[in-house]
Image 1 (cartoon, one colour):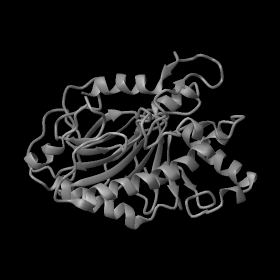
Image 2: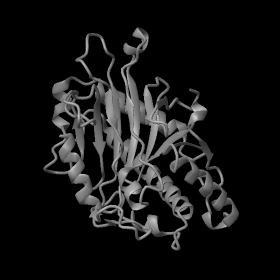
Image 3: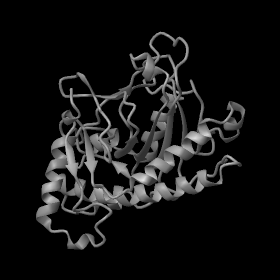
Image 4: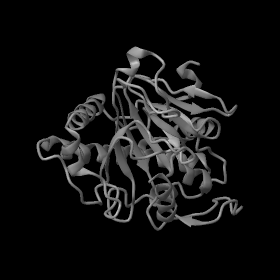
Length: 313
């Protein structure tokens, strides 16, 4: 199925290129909000174009991340993630399984970054740390605008509701995380049932995903059939997370997705990269049905995340 199976939303009129957001008319916001709602209430994924984050910054993040992942394992382990101290650090190959029903770990490595948590950085890559901080800030600014439009799409009386629930992004009291994913080349046999990234839905509000052109990401559509989320030049993939689905009492959808091992021998020998900005509400935000239906039990953002991370690790 073509990339057009995933809707494309042009964000040029409210993207980061728009210096004065107060100049954007209500009719433009409403039109964009409807496009976003239509995508999120069906397949749960969309491509966001003309968003304002320059491709050179994405490419630079991929380059500096690749430099880190090329390090020997013992060097990378000096930066290993320790959940006792937060979400920052290196996630080693074969150390997590996003499909908690399966027992086989995913064939990927990652580096997690959230500014609120202290953690180690590679000593010989000074640009690694500065790149993560800068890119995180860009993602926050874009996320705030996506949340504005999402609030409108949900017909919330307060257009700032979702933005206000994410005020602490990048600071203590919020667990929003930037993750650099690395899927190494496959040169030998893999374990039965092993994939690059197991079937799962994301946990938070929304995710901004920047991917290379290798491919492999698939999303389950409304017919419970997996379709490819192909690379669209210059576009960010945006998808809904579990907490947002709970918040809206299932009006919008946190779709399951996965990254399989390529069938092509040529592609198996290629590495794959992506950058995921996992957006979470402030830790003390209580996620309860916005329509008053109490479809799901109320839970704080932090409690929900800790429950999910316990299942993964």
